[in-house]
Length: 95
View 1 (spheres, rainbow, N blue to C red):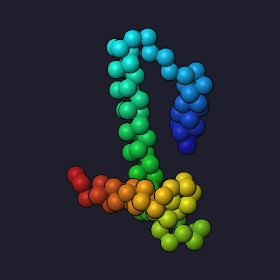
View 2: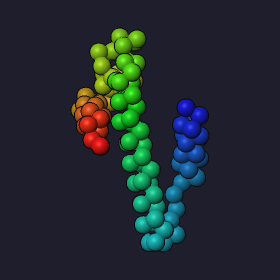
View 3: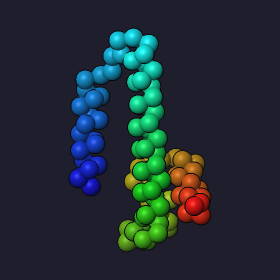
View 4: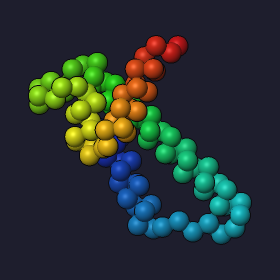
């Protein structure tokens, strides 16, 4: 959890500073880096749902499933929560 706090703080700092690429090359590098960060964040979102599901951590609060818990806590649409749950299930069976 400490690593997540550091990442969140760094992202807050970056958002406050703003993005200002000087030229096309920096703009391309910016796009690539931001997309990479977004994909890593997406992977963490799916992994969070998966670990909550596998460990049954949703049950204590009375949530029917990890998908429902994540949907409620993260304020997601039903379709977004379902997509994450589907990805988590798919990743369990992939090598």
